[in-house]
Length: 129
Image (cartoon, rainbow, N blue to C red):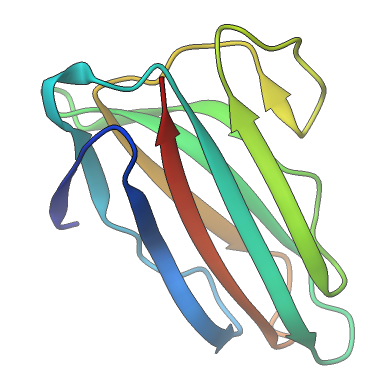
């Protein structure tokens, strides 16, 4: 896993748009100066083949132990469309959409595929105060 530095206001490409049939490897992102308290995750699914299923999970990352923990997991994505996930201490929690939490200094994302059917998607993250 590579590390990328990001700052408040940055829009980060986590996964560029591509057709995928298996769980991809994602970089770890380090927030410079702990400047963000939350984020918006944009998952844009533009094409599917057969019956794909992908669950996206925003994870905190501890660089000392290299452990990850779940901040927010989406519901299974099974169709085209845009899904927005939000993390902020200022929002009311809503299952699979909003986590009432703060962003850790390091984070990553997983996209776990339920089967080998092709699904085309991109994932980006915008850091917010």
